[in-house]
Image (cartoon, rainbow, N blue to C red; front, side, top):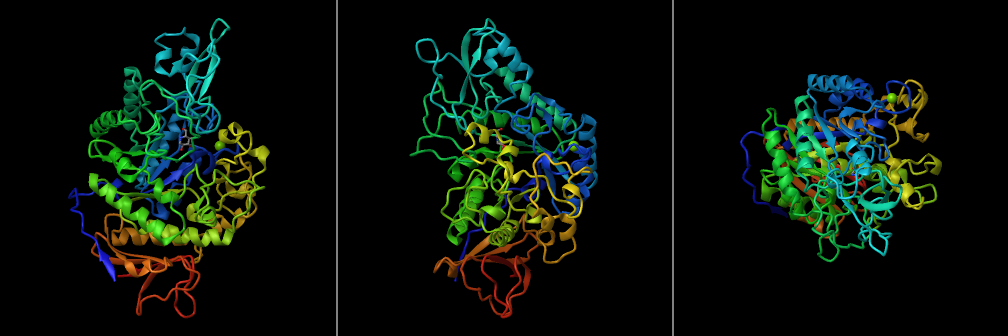
Length: 565
Ligand code: NOJ
Ligand code: MG
């Protein structure tokens, strides 16, 4: 038995690339190092673009490449128009964009508008200027509470731990005002009510659009506008956590005023040819609220963190997929899907944790160690669910290799500011940021020419290196390559989910749905969540499977199959 869904009327007759794109996130520090300093760089990325074209993705999104003191790995920008020398030069950026375009790949840059670096010229000027000055008004400076202003202006907490306020020393040497930083103290929040801030970012958009980039991933898109008067909010904050605490919206997140900003950005992008796009990183619940960011005159896409956070259970995944499809359809935007990024434990490791366990902020050597094989099986199965779905999918570098999280990084090598701001009690995000293994037999697994690597790589990376996987039909790399080829051939990204297989509901042991690609091809996707092998329909033609079928032709536990419909 199956539930047949009403088919939404397609909102556009032609489909711009981003509606169905597979977008590959490059974390520049950790992708490929060309000069041997142990830090990935733009020439390294450019040299590996043919690998991405062969993988079959449509676009690359680069985490920030701008000049930065790297207090938060580049999410603390000191100059939005200049490439950081660690990553290369502006000319290297031009070469990267040109080579990507030559290979048919789009380029999406990360834009960080909520905060700058404390080393940005504006913030330096603000510190040097007096209380109440124009320079200070571009940021959120406030007087402290208490008799002599010794207490922070309100109770807000930083997402990285500790208070969200830091007190400055005034130019005359006295303890002075406080400034707001929702993240690290080296990331002061801008005041988006200031017209100069708005004008500056429109100009930055134009600067990079003129250079040929195809779009922007907008960092903390739900944070730019704060509630009037900055009312107290005592809850701890966490990355990707959009919870509204008893229905009350936090005063720093998802304020209605942010939408006006994105409308003006949309107007800027619409002045350019070539379907440039904006994707929101917004930790907003529920799905209907998130859909407001992708109304027809705002951004084009928003990340789907509800899908990423769904537990390894048929009912959870089904609810998350169906909510997302419904909510995005109400505004005519494509759904998006993501399982891993540079802020979360890699899904190949995360999915080995019990489904009810809270999403961890990193895993350390002292923590219980997840089962690597189980995680890999589930990770591959989840990836095949994601890559079949209509809309746009985001891949995080290394997931096509099935890379696990580094769960035993020595503490002294950690660099994530959230590790420091939590006094070493929270492992943080370094474990998903370890430099990629390209060659099993080379020093540093071929990350760069010298074997240097800004974070140590685990010895297990030898098994995951791209060169040993390439050409091996059982490897995760070949699984992704085949999945992406089929996705394109069948038109799955521009297709529709037409029905759910209700037989799954009984014991929640399986998830099944039927898709219709835009080519008219039909596909049935089945995932086995139970402990027992799953009998597939008689005569089913298996196009792809995340694990080999057993001798009786059944789908093993923790596996997904794509069946011709
Ligand atoms: C979200 C980014 O993905 C994360 O890496 C960063 O630390 C924060 N925003 C602050 O910019
Ligand atoms: Mg380098």
